[in-house]
Each structure stands twice: as C-alpha cells, then as structure tokens.
Image 1 (cartoon, one colour):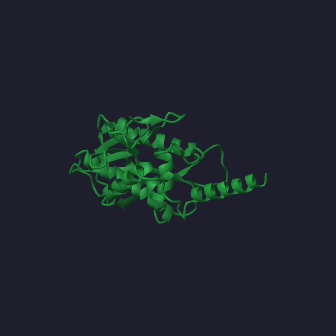
Image 2: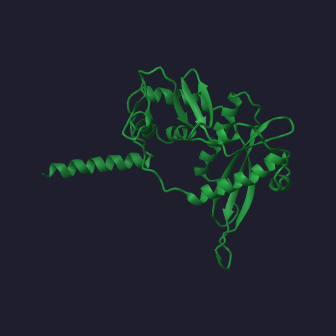
Image 3: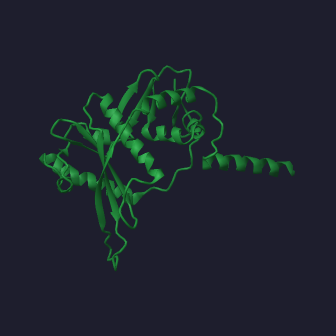
Amino acid sequence: MPFYNNYKKILFDPKSSTSFKISRSKIDLFLECPRCFYFDRRLGISRPPGFPFSLNSAVDTLLKKEFDIHRAKGEPHPLMKSYDINAVPFNHERMDEWRDSLRRGVQFLHEPANLIITGGVDDIWVNPSGELIIVDYKATSKSGEVNLDAEWQNGYKRQMEVYQWLFRRNKFKVSDTGYFVYVNGKTDREAFDARLEFDVKIIPYTGNDDWIEPVILKLKKCLEGNLPLPSDTCEYCSYRAKAHQAEKQKTSLF
C-alpha cells in the first residue's frame, strides 16, 4: 500500500500493486532532473516551493469566466473570431472536473507502467469536425511581442502535448494544433490609476506526443530503482551537494 510522509503526501512504493498517480508537472520534473523527481515521488522530499503567482491565477480565473459565457451560448469568443479560429468553447459536463488538477483533472491509466497520468487543462475548444482543441492560458509582462521562442518555454509545449495525449487516451478526437492565450501586462502607460491593462494574443502550436509513452516507462523504471546520480545542470542538485560538503567540513573542525 502507498505510505505517507509527515505532509500526507502519497509516495511511490515499489512493493505495492496499487496504480500510482503522476501529474503532468511531475513528468516535467523527471525530464528536468531524475534525482529531484526521485526525491519527490519516492522519498517525499520536494524542491522548495516557489512564490505563488497570484496575478497569474487571477488572470486564469477571469479568462475562464469570460470564455464560459460564450461556452454557455455555444458561440465563439471575439478573440477566436479575430484570429479566424473556426471553433467554439467546448461545452461538456466534466469541464470543471478536467480543469481541477488538485482534485482530479483529466486522467488515464497507463497499464504497462501501472501509472495514472493526470493533468488540469485551462480550456478546450471544439472545431466543426468534432476535434478538441487544447488551450492553455499564460500571463506575463514584458516589452515587445510575446512568443514561444525561449528555451524555457519548451515546458509549455510539453504541457500542451501531455494534455493532448490525455484526451486522446480518453477516446476524444484531438487536433494536433492547440492554442496559447497569452496575456501580456502593459507597462507603457503614463500612469497606473489603479488599473492594469493587457494585450491578449493567441499563439498556435502544433504538438507531437510521441515522446510521452517512452518517458512514462523511463520514469517508472526510475521510481523502481536506486537514487539517480546528481545532474550537472540542476541547480538544486548543486545546492544539495555544496551544502552537504560545507556541513562535513564544518563538522570536521570540532
């Protein structure tokens, strides 16, 4: 059976036959650093949490409310019209469930690995041929046009591909093309006046989920094995190693 640490986190037990949940974000953690992933899912030692992005969460909530108005009417959002996207927000009874990654999200049991892959999608649209279009909301504040060209944004692309894969495995027709609704806070105004304005841009992305199943199998093998070696590119691995060395040197002085 799964066991818990002091924070009631369910950890992987290689002796258990119970299907184990792996979220979309933990897949990304494994790709970043297998050692950090092992610490998290096997030993219950997570990376220190980052600061909450409250403004980003507020933007997500408002966008969902706005698109839900058009979802209920069965009509496209004006932004979709302005980008000539022939689709409408997908109206489905499980929409709230699919969005809630903390409670359930969209799930699929990958039987060869006995892992339940989970994720919480921001939005789904549907085109006239019945294909679902995965949509992800992003918020930032930068000068110039937003895009997906930075290396760190590869995680955004993988995120969308995992969602596309999950819905395909749940027997939905899914378009290879998804969209990022990218909201960019304007900083060129003369005065704040207690009002923050945004530019909103829709960026298409053609996903390819061929990488996902091989990674799931590698991830499972990692969980079943020994603690991986530190990664040369992981700042957390570097910090742990340097801190441990400093502790040893300090202790040896006494």
